[in-house]
Image (cartoon, rainbow, N blue to C red; front, side):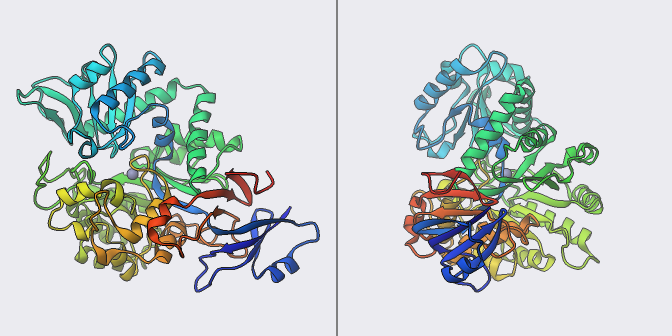
Length: 536
Ligand SMILES: [Zn+2]
């Protein structure tokens, strides 16, 4: 089947090319793109024509780092994000409501809050969760997924007791009497999330698992996302994605970053590599430190805000180097979460050792986030050819917290312009469900770098609009070894594209957040559309 798209502003993102007026899609790939006359001449007589009334077409947007299955899982619980739940009473009401529809044996779950965005400007407490859900375990995840709050029943079930010391790799919040206040940071929080998610996944029927994958896919497709790296892929989720792929139910193309402790399983599972055009697992994920918004990223010096300290580093250099060396030798692309400067230095040291003697960085080993990558580290990362997958959308959602936690260096955080100037490949991403997966907000924030309260963090690091779009298309495609197939609209590439009601390269950046996605197509087929623009 052939499809001609015309009466459109087609932003191809091909190197050096301006917008085209028409595009021909044949068998799921782009057959021609250019002036309407040329495109029609290349088409067969039976080709179907869709006129877009001047709408803008951009390459399918790619989210190089998010947590697709977590999005599907948390979507079933209570939305406790701000501004939708502005204070603790609203969070309590939503947890109470979620309790009514949570099956017995599963924890009542809420997510998405940021303590400094709440009216109370603090974490909710165990007592406040008890007031909402008194008789069964309840958990409220911080949006960073590096912290959570538990009620008393959940603390009991998790085996956490007043008077116990902080567990290794984590911290427990305490009230003025030293009693646990319910807040859990890092290591034990990850363990709890995993335990709950895994537990709930195993209790799901095949139909419920399919629903989880489907609802995540619908969410991303509606935002114009045609491919996503799932940065937390494990045995059960990769299996659920493979089931969905088998059933033809995957919408965005999924590129799995499989968690490092599941690599042995992956190698023996038959799911390593490219399973289909929609599902691949070729990369491995390692966490080297904590989060920025939870103030647990491993930094030099100490945080001036709670929980204070210098953050948490999960592996020392010899351990990390050994892991990277082993994975590199097995042919995996390695993607390491590193936020604080102390973590990023450790990761660069490990990469430098493993890549010594290689020509460049052939497997495209990545740093995920790279928040506090200060100038000397940028030069080193560029020299090593490290790819960085980062999240401009953090500025408007979490940026005021960064300014408090990094009072002296907040202008240097997430240095998008410096990365590009140094010649690094930068991949745009959301880290959803940490923040919304909306790539248009990410593009806007890459241009404006403005926080929720209106300060601009690092004006010199703002990107021109074309570069902002490029990180979500070409850059992200490179970061997942797919630059020959996606990331720009050029003949031979897959027909993954998005129809927008305005051109983000032309309008005032302030307006980009309000641009509407009219349709999302993958391989030339609509996976989302606002009306009946494309034949089904
Ligand atoms: Zn992440």
